Image (cartoon, rainbow, N blue to C red; front, side, top):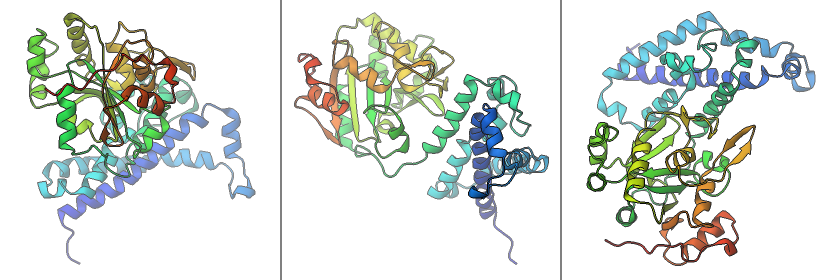
Length: 386
C-alpha cells in the first residue's frame, strides 16, 4: 500500500476528531438535563422493550464517556491535530471542506474546555473534560450548567446556514449604509437562513454597535484613550462593528456583518458628544468577554448581543422580560425603543435585501407585529447621502 499523505492524514484525523467531540458535546448537553432529575435518571435507566431500550443505558453512556482509554486517545488526537495544523499548507487550509471540519472542532465546547483551564474554573472547578461527571458535580453547575447546555446547543445550531445573506457582497448597500452610520449607532440584523435565527423570539435576531472610524473617534476626542489604543489597527482596517457572537465579544467589519437579509440602524436623537464618546468606550471595554448563553442581563462577566446594547446605552430605560428565572433583553426589545417613545431613531432599513426609503418605521413595526398606532411619525431620519 502507498503511504497516506500528510494532508490526508490530517483530514482523516479531523474528520474523526470532530465526530468524537460532537459525541462528547452531546453527552454533556444531555447530562446537564437528566442529572438534575432523579425521576428522569431512573426512567432512562429502566428497561423498556417498547422502545428497544435496555437496562442501565444511561449508565452505559456515562461509562463510555468516562472511559480512560478513550480520553487518552482523544488527547493524543488533539495534540496531533494542533501540531499538523500549524504545518498545513495554505492550499489545504483554504479548502472549504477543510474549513468546515476545522470549525466543527474549534466550536466544540469539549475541545475548548480541554484547552482552556479558565473555562473549567468558571464551571465551579468541578466539571472537567475527560474526568468523571457525577450527579453532584452537575447539580452544582446551576446557572453554569444551563450556560453550558445553551453553549453546546448554540454552537451546534450556529453551524447550520442554508445560504448567504441577500446583502452579502452587495457593494452598493454597503456604501449606502456606511455613509449613513455615525459612531455609536445600533445595528440590528435578520438572518432567516440560519437555524439559530429561528430560535430567537421576535423578528430581529442580532444586535451590534458601530463604534465609528478613526476620524470620528478623533473628533470625539477619544482616539488616544487607553480603551481605544489597543484597537487602532482593527479600526483602521474597518473592524468597527462590536458584537457578541458565540466565540465572545469581538470586532468585525461591516462587510462581515452584512451577511444578512435585513438590517436596521438606530440612533439616539439627542445624545451629546460626551455621551456618544462614553458609549463607544464602554462598548470597547466589552471586547473579549465570553458569550452569555444564559441570556441574563444581570450578569457582567458574560454578555449576549442585545445585552451589549443594554450595557452600553445605560441612559435608556430598556424593556426586559423574565424567562426561566432570569431577566433577558432581545433584539426586538431594542428595536421597540424606535417605535414607541422616541429614545431611538430609525436611520436606515433594508428588508429582504433591498433598501426601504418610504415609511420605514411603519414597515419595521409590521415586521415586528407591533401596532402602527404606537409609532411616533417624526421618529424617522432621511438617509444621509454624503
